[in-house]
Image (cartoon, rainbow, N blue to C red; front, side, top):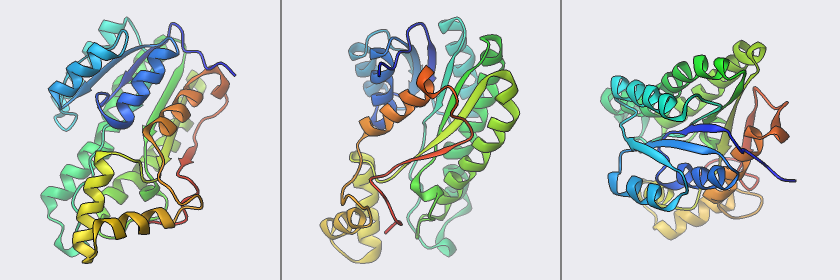
Length: 258
């Protein structure tokens, strides 16, 4: 099955690293023109130099005014919009709920949930003008099972599920599909930082924590950024034209979070 995005215009937030970068790569290979942002200027410049046709600017999605300006510039640069991928996220604090500061709670929800709201809000008029399209929000297995010592992150990712379903109900009549993807632990620098923090909080080694997290999957392994990117490609392509309002797990059969 050929998953073709030829002629499609896509915005992907935080597209210079991890899942965002891999998604930008797969989209570009499928024929889409991609506009992105990232906090890491060096990573962004490297992505733009490496991924054919990729455009973008540095932006902190936690700054509402700057993010809205980014969205306006992206839609203008692309000449419209067909696909919006709200990928930006942050791990947030690792601590018992009673020790989480309001500042850390707010920052985590702002990046993981409010940015998806703002991105969607800006994308919708452009998608309607294009005659329809696709929005993909990044949730997490933490938005399905809960995640001990990560209450802000889990709350945000559960919020993405409800936001996604509601937007799908509102936007279906406009030909706009809205889905979210729920990755399990994804290999890379981000999960390494999470493993380190949880290992320290639990008083065990990082290797023990990594094994513990892999052992709660049916396949006894983590997934890759490519696994997530290809799921996003599928639901944004014509092959996924009747998939909307769904929370799609890509997690090697995760049965809970360690």
